[in-house]
Image (cartoon, rainbow, N blue to C red; front, side, top):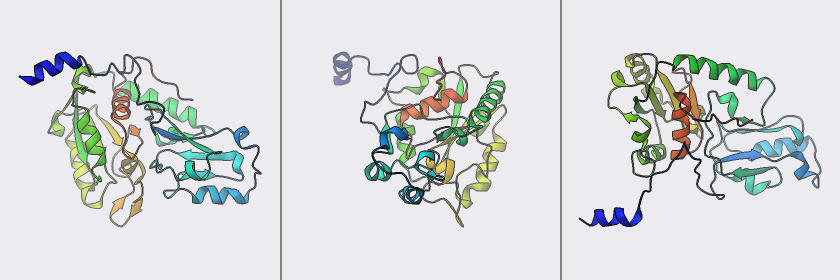
Length: 270
Protein backbone atom coordinates (compact mmCIF):
# COMPACT_ATOMS: atom_id res chain seq x y z
CA UNK A 1 0.00 0.00 0.00
CA UNK A 2 2.62 2.57 -1.02
CA UNK A 3 -0.06 5.11 -1.95
CA UNK A 4 -1.09 5.38 1.72
CA UNK A 5 2.40 6.45 2.78
CA UNK A 6 2.67 8.75 -0.21
CA UNK A 7 -0.57 10.45 0.79
CA UNK A 8 0.62 10.90 4.36
CA UNK A 9 3.92 12.29 3.14
CA UNK A 10 2.51 14.78 0.63
CA UNK A 11 -0.55 15.85 2.58
CA UNK A 12 -3.49 17.64 0.97
CA UNK A 13 -2.73 18.71 -2.60
CA UNK A 14 -6.23 19.84 -3.58
CA UNK A 15 -6.53 23.53 -4.33
CA UNK A 16 -8.79 25.69 -2.17
CA UNK A 17 -9.97 27.65 -5.21
CA UNK A 18 -12.36 29.48 -5.38
CA UNK A 19 -12.57 29.99 -1.61
CA UNK A 20 -8.95 31.14 -1.72
CA UNK A 21 -7.23 32.53 -4.80
CA UNK A 22 -4.78 30.23 -6.52
CA UNK A 23 -2.72 30.60 -9.67
CA UNK A 24 0.18 29.19 -11.65
CA UNK A 25 2.76 31.83 -10.85
CA UNK A 26 4.00 35.01 -12.55
CA UNK A 27 5.33 33.23 -15.65
CA UNK A 28 1.97 31.73 -16.61
CA UNK A 29 0.58 32.84 -19.99
CA UNK A 30 -2.95 33.48 -18.84
CA UNK A 31 -3.94 36.18 -21.30
CA UNK A 32 -2.54 38.93 -23.48
CA UNK A 33 -3.11 42.51 -22.40
CA UNK A 34 -2.48 45.87 -24.04
CA UNK A 35 0.01 48.03 -22.19
CA UNK A 36 -0.87 51.66 -21.43
CA UNK A 37 0.17 54.10 -24.14
CA UNK A 38 2.58 55.74 -21.70
CA UNK A 39 4.72 52.61 -21.95
CA UNK A 40 5.35 53.41 -25.61
CA UNK A 41 6.03 57.11 -25.40
CA UNK A 42 9.61 56.54 -26.52
CA UNK A 43 8.35 55.06 -29.78
CA UNK A 44 6.73 57.24 -32.44
CA UNK A 45 3.04 56.51 -33.04
CA UNK A 46 1.62 56.64 -36.55
CA UNK A 47 -1.46 55.39 -38.33
CA UNK A 48 0.66 53.23 -40.63
CA UNK A 49 1.88 51.22 -37.64
CA UNK A 50 -1.68 50.08 -36.93
CA UNK A 51 -1.66 47.71 -39.88
CA UNK A 52 1.70 46.34 -38.77
CA UNK A 53 0.28 45.55 -35.34
CA UNK A 54 -2.76 43.81 -36.77
CA UNK A 55 -0.51 41.74 -39.04
CA UNK A 56 1.27 40.32 -36.00
CA UNK A 57 -1.72 38.16 -35.06
CA UNK A 58 -2.47 35.04 -37.14
CA UNK A 59 -6.10 34.97 -35.95
CA UNK A 60 -6.97 38.66 -36.24
CA UNK A 61 -7.21 39.21 -32.49
CA UNK A 62 -5.46 42.60 -32.64
CA UNK A 63 -7.60 45.56 -33.60
CA UNK A 64 -5.68 48.81 -34.08
CA UNK A 65 -8.17 51.40 -35.28
CA UNK A 66 -6.67 54.69 -36.38
CA UNK A 67 -3.47 54.79 -34.35
CA UNK A 68 -1.50 52.85 -31.78
CA UNK A 69 -3.35 54.63 -29.00
CA UNK A 70 -6.56 52.71 -29.80
CA UNK A 71 -5.21 49.17 -29.83
CA UNK A 72 -7.50 46.39 -28.60
CA UNK A 73 -6.97 42.65 -28.18
CA UNK A 74 -9.91 40.32 -28.68
CA UNK A 75 -9.19 37.43 -26.33
CA UNK A 76 -11.95 35.39 -27.93
CA UNK A 77 -9.62 35.07 -30.96
CA UNK A 78 -6.26 35.00 -29.17
CA UNK A 79 -4.47 31.64 -29.18
CA UNK A 80 -1.66 32.84 -26.86
CA UNK A 81 1.01 32.25 -29.47
CA UNK A 82 3.00 35.21 -28.15
CA UNK A 83 3.95 36.70 -31.53
CA UNK A 84 2.67 40.13 -30.54
CA UNK A 85 4.47 40.06 -27.19
CA UNK A 86 7.75 39.00 -28.79
CA UNK A 87 7.55 41.60 -31.56
CA UNK A 88 6.20 44.53 -29.59
CA UNK A 89 6.83 44.15 -25.84
CA UNK A 90 6.20 47.88 -25.56
CA UNK A 91 2.56 47.36 -26.57
CA UNK A 92 1.62 43.84 -25.45
CA UNK A 93 2.35 41.61 -22.48
CA UNK A 94 1.23 38.36 -20.92
CA UNK A 95 -0.63 38.49 -17.60
CA UNK A 96 -0.78 35.43 -15.31
CA UNK A 97 -4.55 35.72 -14.88
CA UNK A 98 -6.56 32.49 -14.61
CA UNK A 99 -10.03 34.05 -14.32
CA UNK A 100 -10.37 34.96 -17.98
CA UNK A 101 -13.89 33.73 -18.75
CA UNK A 102 -16.96 35.92 -19.05
CA UNK A 103 -20.57 35.89 -20.19
CA UNK A 104 -20.03 37.36 -23.65
CA UNK A 105 -17.29 37.46 -26.30
CA UNK A 106 -17.64 41.26 -26.22
CA UNK A 107 -16.40 41.17 -22.62
CA UNK A 108 -13.15 39.58 -23.79
CA UNK A 109 -12.03 42.66 -25.70
CA UNK A 110 -9.38 44.61 -23.79
CA UNK A 111 -9.34 47.47 -23.08
CA UNK A 112 -13.13 47.68 -22.76
CA UNK A 113 -14.90 49.11 -25.78
CA UNK A 114 -17.58 51.78 -25.54
CA UNK A 115 -20.88 50.31 -24.42
CA UNK A 116 -19.34 46.94 -23.61
CA UNK A 117 -19.80 47.15 -19.85
CA UNK A 118 -23.55 47.68 -20.10
CA UNK A 119 -23.99 44.72 -22.47
CA UNK A 120 -22.00 42.51 -20.12
CA UNK A 121 -24.02 43.68 -17.10
CA UNK A 122 -27.27 42.78 -18.83
CA UNK A 123 -25.92 39.36 -19.87
CA UNK A 124 -24.81 38.62 -16.31
CA UNK A 125 -28.20 39.65 -14.94
CA UNK A 126 -30.03 37.38 -17.39
CA UNK A 127 -27.72 34.46 -16.62
CA UNK A 128 -28.24 34.96 -12.87
CA UNK A 129 -32.01 34.88 -13.36
CA UNK A 130 -31.87 31.60 -15.28
CA UNK A 131 -29.63 29.69 -12.87
CA UNK A 132 -31.40 30.61 -9.63
CA UNK A 133 -32.97 27.14 -9.57
CA UNK A 134 -29.56 25.45 -9.54
CA UNK A 135 -28.15 24.15 -6.30
CA UNK A 136 -24.87 22.42 -5.49
CA UNK A 137 -25.42 19.36 -7.64
CA UNK A 138 -24.46 20.43 -11.13
CA UNK A 139 -24.03 17.88 -13.89
CA UNK A 140 -21.86 18.63 -16.91
CA UNK A 141 -21.98 17.03 -20.33
CA UNK A 142 -18.79 17.56 -22.32
CA UNK A 143 -19.16 17.64 -26.10
CA UNK A 144 -16.22 17.62 -28.51
CA UNK A 145 -17.25 19.57 -31.60
CA UNK A 146 -13.97 19.38 -33.48
CA UNK A 147 -11.27 19.93 -30.88
CA UNK A 148 -7.56 19.31 -31.39
CA UNK A 149 -7.54 17.41 -28.09
CA UNK A 150 -5.72 19.96 -25.96
CA UNK A 151 -8.90 21.15 -24.20
CA UNK A 152 -9.78 17.57 -23.35
CA UNK A 153 -6.50 17.14 -21.46
CA UNK A 154 -7.29 20.18 -19.29
CA UNK A 155 -10.89 19.05 -18.72
CA UNK A 156 -9.68 15.62 -17.63
CA UNK A 157 -7.44 17.31 -15.06
CA UNK A 158 -10.53 18.71 -13.34
CA UNK A 159 -11.40 15.28 -11.99
CA UNK A 160 -7.93 14.67 -10.50
CA UNK A 161 -6.88 15.28 -6.90
CA UNK A 162 -5.47 18.78 -7.48
CA UNK A 163 -8.62 20.42 -8.86
CA UNK A 164 -11.21 17.82 -7.72
CA UNK A 165 -14.27 19.39 -9.33
CA UNK A 166 -16.54 17.05 -7.37
CA UNK A 167 -15.80 18.96 -4.16
CA UNK A 168 -17.70 21.88 -5.69
CA UNK A 169 -20.77 19.76 -6.32
CA UNK A 170 -20.04 19.39 -10.04
CA UNK A 171 -20.07 16.05 -11.81
CA UNK A 172 -19.58 14.91 -15.39
CA UNK A 173 -22.41 12.90 -16.91
CA UNK A 174 -22.53 10.67 -19.97
CA UNK A 175 -25.92 11.87 -21.18
CA UNK A 176 -27.34 15.33 -21.89
CA UNK A 177 -30.64 14.26 -20.36
CA UNK A 178 -29.02 14.46 -16.92
CA UNK A 179 -27.01 17.59 -17.64
CA UNK A 180 -27.33 21.18 -16.47
CA UNK A 181 -24.28 22.47 -18.38
CA UNK A 182 -23.05 21.67 -21.87
CA UNK A 183 -19.27 22.15 -21.93
CA UNK A 184 -18.40 22.37 -25.62
CA UNK A 185 -14.92 22.31 -27.13
CA UNK A 186 -13.77 22.54 -30.73
CA UNK A 187 -14.34 24.77 -33.74
CA UNK A 188 -17.85 23.52 -34.43
CA UNK A 189 -17.32 21.32 -37.46
CA UNK A 190 -20.08 21.04 -40.03
CA UNK A 191 -20.49 17.37 -39.23
CA UNK A 192 -21.19 18.15 -35.58
CA UNK A 193 -23.73 20.93 -36.10
CA UNK A 194 -26.81 18.69 -36.08
CA UNK A 195 -25.40 16.63 -33.21
CA UNK A 196 -24.86 19.77 -31.14
CA UNK A 197 -28.45 20.87 -31.74
CA UNK A 198 -29.81 17.44 -30.77
CA UNK A 199 -27.68 17.45 -27.62
CA UNK A 200 -28.93 20.91 -26.71
CA UNK A 201 -32.56 19.90 -27.30
CA UNK A 202 -32.10 16.77 -25.17
CA UNK A 203 -30.76 18.79 -22.23
CA UNK A 204 -33.54 19.79 -19.81
CA UNK A 205 -33.93 23.42 -18.89
CA UNK A 206 -32.71 25.58 -17.39
CA UNK A 207 -29.49 24.79 -19.20
CA UNK A 208 -26.21 26.58 -19.71
CA UNK A 209 -23.78 26.37 -22.65
CA UNK A 210 -20.10 27.01 -21.97
CA UNK A 211 -17.76 27.49 -24.94
CA UNK A 212 -14.40 26.21 -23.67
CA UNK A 213 -11.38 27.45 -25.57
CA UNK A 214 -10.66 29.92 -28.34
CA UNK A 215 -11.62 27.33 -30.95
CA UNK A 216 -15.12 26.97 -29.51
CA UNK A 217 -15.57 30.74 -29.21
CA UNK A 218 -14.27 31.97 -32.57
CA UNK A 219 -12.76 29.05 -34.47
CA UNK A 220 -9.18 29.93 -33.52
CA UNK A 221 -6.67 29.29 -36.30
CA UNK A 222 -9.28 27.48 -38.38
CA UNK A 223 -11.89 30.23 -38.27
CA UNK A 224 -14.97 29.94 -40.46
CA UNK A 225 -14.49 27.57 -43.40
CA UNK A 226 -16.50 25.16 -45.52
CA UNK A 227 -15.92 22.55 -42.79
CA UNK A 228 -16.39 24.62 -39.63
CA UNK A 229 -18.75 27.27 -38.31
CA UNK A 230 -16.01 29.38 -36.73
CA UNK A 231 -16.98 28.48 -33.18
CA UNK A 232 -20.20 27.10 -31.75
CA UNK A 233 -22.00 30.44 -31.35
CA UNK A 234 -23.72 30.10 -34.73
CA UNK A 235 -25.08 26.66 -33.72
CA UNK A 236 -25.94 27.06 -30.02
CA UNK A 237 -26.78 29.99 -27.74
CA UNK A 238 -23.59 30.42 -25.69
CA UNK A 239 -23.86 31.70 -22.11
CA UNK A 240 -20.23 31.68 -20.91
CA UNK A 241 -17.00 31.87 -22.89
CA UNK A 242 -13.64 30.67 -21.55
CA UNK A 243 -10.76 31.78 -23.81
CA UNK A 244 -7.41 30.07 -24.08
CA UNK A 245 -5.75 27.61 -26.39
CA UNK A 246 -6.31 25.57 -24.37
CA UNK A 247 -7.92 27.15 -21.29
CA UNK A 248 -6.28 26.14 -18.02
CA UNK A 249 -8.11 23.99 -15.45
CA UNK A 250 -8.42 27.05 -13.19
CA UNK A 251 -9.86 28.96 -16.14
CA UNK A 252 -12.37 26.18 -16.73
CA UNK A 253 -13.30 26.10 -13.04
CA UNK A 254 -13.83 29.85 -13.05
CA UNK A 255 -16.02 29.62 -16.16
CA UNK A 256 -18.15 26.81 -14.75
CA UNK A 257 -18.62 28.57 -11.41
CA UNK A 258 -19.47 31.77 -13.26
CA UNK A 259 -22.02 29.85 -15.31
CA UNK A 260 -23.96 28.70 -12.25
CA UNK A 261 -23.41 31.87 -10.20
CA UNK A 262 -21.39 30.11 -7.49
CA UNK A 263 -18.35 32.39 -7.37
CA UNK A 264 -17.98 33.61 -3.77
CA UNK A 265 -16.65 37.00 -4.89
CA UNK A 266 -17.43 37.63 -8.56
CA UNK A 267 -14.38 39.19 -10.13
CA UNK A 268 -14.69 42.66 -11.59
CA UNK A 269 -12.02 42.65 -14.29
CA UNK A 270 -12.80 46.14 -15.47
